[in-house]
Amino acid sequence: MMSQMPQLSACPSCEWPLESGDRFCGACGYDLSAVPARPDDSPTIAMNGAPPGGPWPEVPHPPAEVHLPADLRGTESGGHEPPPSGPVVGSPVSPVSGVRFDRSPEPDEYVLQAPDPRVAAGPPTPAEGTKVCVACRAGRVDDDGYCENCGHAQPRERDHMEQEAGPIAAVSDRGLRHHRNEDAFTLGTSVLPDGSPATFAVVCDGVSSATRPDDASLAASRAAADALLAALPQGTHPQQAMHESIVAASRAVNSLAAEPATAREHQPHQNAPACTIVGSIVTPSLLVVGWVGDSRVYWVPTDRSSPPARLTEDDSWAAQMVAAGLMNEAEAYADERAHAITGWLGADAYELDPHTASFKPDRPGVVVVCTDGLWNYAEAADEMAEAVPADAAARPLHTARVLVGHALDGGGHDNVTVAVVPFPTPPQGAGSA
Image (cartoon, one colour):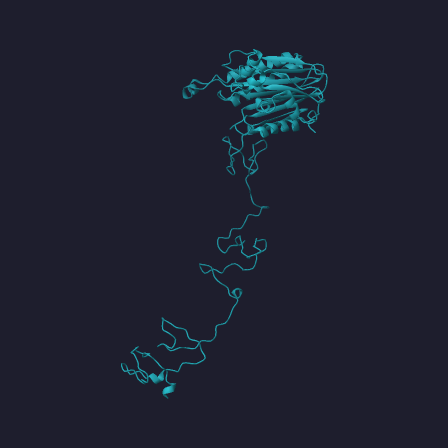
């Protein structure tokens, strides 16, 4: 029946335009009554831009099965199955969005088995006495200062040094502005011929404008200590022993200037290595100090109701101005020339003039031996005493650390070195609590 024939606008076979009521295609003779009727209950999808009811026969499709996103397995680019969508134990997942911020603990490709720490062979343990890397704690440090295992550059040993020697202690630090530590110190204990103990500390400050100031300070401190260790047990008076130790230190620094001629040719503008020196010897009844330059010794009594004192006088421009009466101390040390030294150890020094002095304190206290990296921030004796902890005699290492911290807190513009020596000399075996 006409009402049952599909209404087509073009022949399904050759796409020839049709008119309403045509039973056959006028171009190819296609039997239009053979086209199945369009079902009334199925949705249609327009294909190739043709409107619904267009020239293409509509084929009914079963309704699509509905799935939740988690019901179907997807694939990653490359065709691999993705990892499970549920949270992996130990993986951080946002509690708000559920987004995972880490990778799957077992990736699908390039799986590498982690070595079992119980059986994995690490780098060989360095021999006893070998310098070990501060980073990996296993590799040996080569002569250039790098770990042979992990390649980590090692901090220089002299950037920060601490030492205890019986009842005395010292700390040295590079400070916050200098690229290296040019200070050095040596501590020692000895026994006098009568069996009484003696302790000493030597502190040296390299002259930065000189060549190899760090070598100069190290050589001077070691030579002075060796001289004291040799002289004191033989009965040499401590003040004479201090004088001789400064002379020995001067010789050691002078010897550094004896460089090969080829070195001078490559660096013709070098000058002689130089440093300052200050030291203190403490016996049960005597306190001796010696110095050349502007490093200092302070006396701080345990009873803070007693006055502290500075026991040395600087070899410096400022001190000369004050001694000559040309300036008061405040004016002299405010001048930019204040720290220009007039005495030092080195081959180009005008003359060697060691200063020594002896004292017999009538009460216990501590001797503070330091470079200008500390006393720049506690110049007056009262200021130094205020920075020294009350229990300094019982805890010299702690006290030295506190004083270095005081300088660093103040700005740390220079290397800082301080030794703390209790007076009178404590019994052998006493030390920091």
